[in-house]
Length: 357
Image (cartoon, rainbow, N blue to C red):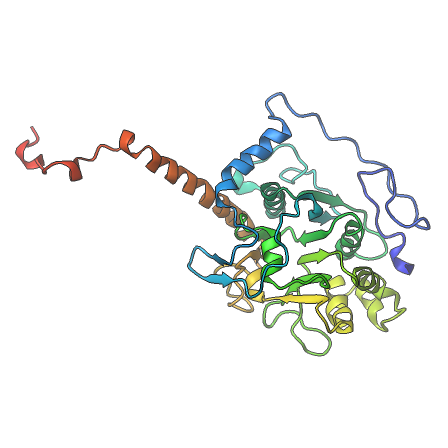
């Protein structure tokens, strides 16, 4: 494993998850403070999330999805996944920096919604998404080592795939455009097969390119799964900077987008089959109204605010409120006969007969 041994350890665990030759992990972090008396139990909090989104859930085998703008996304093939995978799917955030400062996700106090940092809003969106669909969720706090922080997610995905069938990594500046659309449906929609190791989107036009001038891919959103080539692909990716296979890859310990550059310059060219699935840029990159780079990439399913971090908070608020207000609107009409006094349609207009005094 070369440079990778000694890279990271779990800051919240006293048991080191790395190979036996790796140095010991950092001391365990102190336990979180106990819940305040006003906090409802965790299962009650989850039920609140479920009750909001349950009526909207898209079936895993749905033949198509129609966006709010009317854009249709039909399944092109018979769905491979037909039953919920539940806790076999992990939604994962990865961070090497402290997250307990004011406004950060591990701080128990949430400031005014307009003051919440983008990365907190993004991670709360990821947690919410996992709870909506019954997936597992982990925020992996890791320790940076010889390789820079961006490599943490690669090693974390590799390790998690030993315990989960599917691992979804998503950057803190990315969010789910339609939280009611399950991962299983997206995997069917994007054509992931039993041989697929990883699915990730094309980068925006004019963005990152590989050494051959080809359009790059963005590792800020990845769906990975257990497959025949999973161990091989991740072993190649993780050891790329060692230059045991790829001359000149050692520069990505420091330069450029590190792990992303290693993937698009070297790893993806080793596979010609269905091991790597390319997600269309417009479906998992950019955001509505984006003008930088490729205007066609507007985040149909995953919005990624690479050039406008401040847009994350507003997008999450809009997403949640869309569902909430639809429920409120439906309840309003459910009580229509009790709350609406409709003189305009139930009797002749007589307002002119009674002049104001």
